Amino acid sequence: MGQHYRMVNLDKKQYLHPYKLGDGLKLLEFGTAGEGTMMALAALLADGNGRGGGDLLSDHPLVGSWAGDRIVIAGDYADNGRFVDNSERNLYTEACEQFEDISDRIREVLEDAGEPLRTNWT
Image (tube, rainbow, N blue to C red; front, side, top):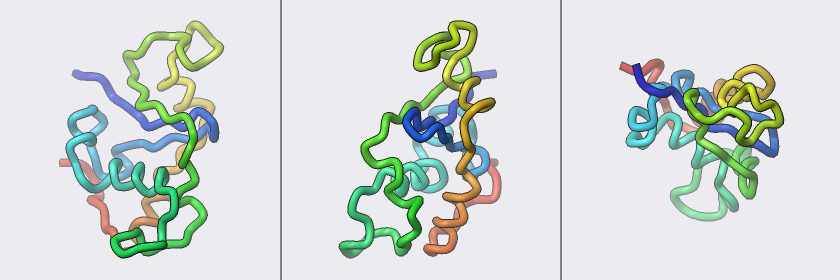
């Protein structure tokens, strides 16, 4: 079956869901793609976007909002208690239940900036 992942921002209590960004949920399914999840992550981590050629054509406040934050690519098979206070849960589960999913919001930002993403992973 394989392990599924989400990109989790520990500081902002937000996460990205790869499937909503047009990718598969496994590490190699989204990690080797140039668009989708990796493009969303790059946009969120960008520090200084809009100051040079080749930047994302957006001044949306979400762009760069994760720069400097603690980010984890959390798997659903990860150890319980790591990154969370509850020793019965792992970060993947904690994020799914307690954090904000910003996948749809960053997808809109990317599409408005002319970076169309796949509608689903095939």
